[in-house]
Image (tube, rainbow, N blue to C red; front, side, top):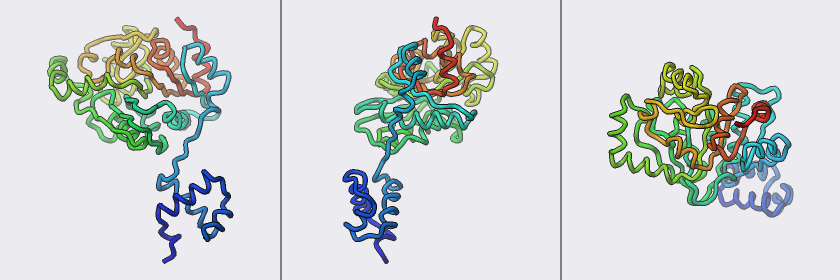
Length: 317
């Protein structure tokens, strides 16, 4: 059996080192190691598949443009990435924005960070696209308790996948996201294990989240955290957006109700305290996004060009 059919990680790493670090071309590597050029090409492909080589795309292209700079200045953000939206819509647009966010995430994090992760389709797409890029001493935590349906894009599944790709410790939240009564929620919060997990959320210095407008099809209804009637009640009291199950008004201030007392997870104050990376797409999320930015929930933004333009056209309060 020839060695190129089942190559060891050692020879693959050697080929990758010569190609990516020493900048030798494929022909030079083939000659130096007595391999054929097709074998070298095959080994370079295997280097990526086996995570011997992890490629991180620097998203400067999305940072260095006039629209991103204008958003950064207007809302006092640290970084902004704007993704072209020409011809894209719906899930295709969301995935394009999430891809940029996923490759930005390793730049967003540094050694020792504790990352709080929300849930939903957008965060799920980000978790699937994060490159395998280990960062030392990073911890990933759920921002909200667990949901029963394993098919949904839960905070637990998103947190676990992101932690796996960053070679980080993952601390899941062993409590339900929402319970049926205020009294039950209060009792659960006093349970030592759950109280310890809630206190652990205060260690999160950064967060990854998206948001939703207050509409009947919002993710909190899809996940059965709230009913359509409960969302409508919050909307009538001024809510325009939802972040990690928490409702905010047009100025980014908390809109509170009974549901808040039944949720088990990060509250408005804690979410605002973290350095937030907001990933959002779609023009219909304009009001919710503007509210989150005005309310200080996000320090970093990845969005699409159409939404970016709408945010620039809006007057800050």
